[in-house]
Length: 182
Image (cartoon, rainbow, N blue to C red; front, side, top):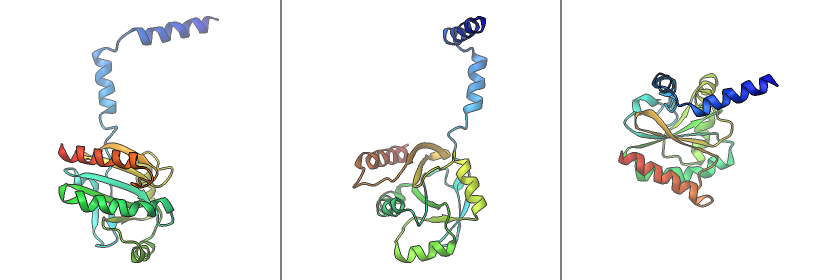
């Protein structure tokens, strides 16, 4: 019974008292980089060049975690090609980050599917670390919209398809345009 009263007093104290400035400063310090996209460097399939996220801090970046064996991932490609064509010159980079494919598998895939934006790959341990750094990508496709200064602005779990989910697609376009105008 005493524990019940102590718990009630503790909860009341938390909700009835405001945080002091020192507590607020500590919370800000601990959460300052919570939305910062973790840096990575990966190879691109087409140009066999390196892409480092921190080098794109003045750009808006769409990171799409995907795989060649994923049907919804394949369905997104034409819409992402359209976005890349429309917004790349305005400052949007799209990076297709393959979670499980080798360079050879991606080369073969690109013989059949046209992808206009960079497709990235790496050793599986590096890819696994990136997946963990991004909070654990539990399903694919999963897409992160990153604003300037490498701040994560939106996370889109599932396929972003203009034809099948126009609301999600419109939200993506709206947020891209908003971030590009900043």
